[in-house]
Amino acid sequence: MKAYDSNAYRLFTFANYLILLAIGLLCVLPMFHLLAVSFSSKGPANANLVGLWPIGFTTEAYAEAFTNTKYLKSFLVTFERIALGVTINMILTFLLAYPLSKESRDFPLRSVYVWFIVFTMLFGGGLIPSYMLMKQLHLMDTIWALVLPGAVPVFNVIMLLNFFRQLPKELEESAFMDGASHMVSLIRIYVPLSMPAIATLTLFSVVGHWNSWFDGLIYMKSPDHYPLQTYLQILLEQTKNAITLDGAKQISEVAKRSLYSAQIFMAMLPILLVYPFLQKYFVKGIVLGSVKG
Image (cartoon, rainbow, N blue to C red; front, side, top):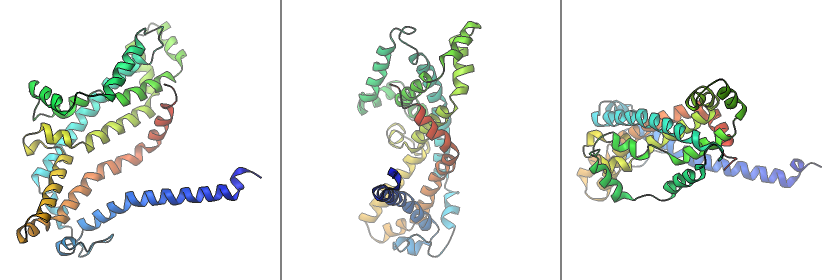
């Protein structure tokens, strides 16, 4: 009798499915609720009567969201941040991971550099030194204050150097025999063979920049320069204060709950649309880069 034919295995599999189903519902149901609220009229939305299906279906919230200039500007800031941030992240990650993936006989101080960058991942300077540094560099209220502090994602570097160490060394040795340099080897051999890792690390960087809101709150002075998540965070705080402080005047503000739900749902859409296309590379890249230390 095989192990997977036993009752214990079937019970274990059934329990796994139940747990995964519960976790999946916890992730998906809030999004359906948000979508339903965004398509509901203001009355049912304000009275918390909306569940998973819109009440008083209307698209006014989305029409208003597309005419909100602050919201659209925050979208543009976030796209600019992703374009600059992900490009810088990927270039620096490749330039750092490639030499660190070499053997100690080819790069004698490799271990020292690896431990140094791991140290920076575990211990940081703190919020106030980071703020003072941005101020002294005159980067406050600029897009570079959102991009440069995380220019070298150490976790991504470690994943990529592990990925590089699993590639066949014979390819690089043959290139060196033909007169190739390290830079040529990196661009012509390592990069084409690293598509799963590139897709995975790109997804990490995109999601990281897309979800960041705290740095925008600290480093941006003008609301016009807020990235999308910072704008939404401030929006939610304003809604919370409106509920707890005043009466009729705040209720008229909370009447925008459908609008806020529409804006939040629109903010989720790009990641939800991109993720399925990178899923197959994502899984392969994670597995390949997780074996060696």
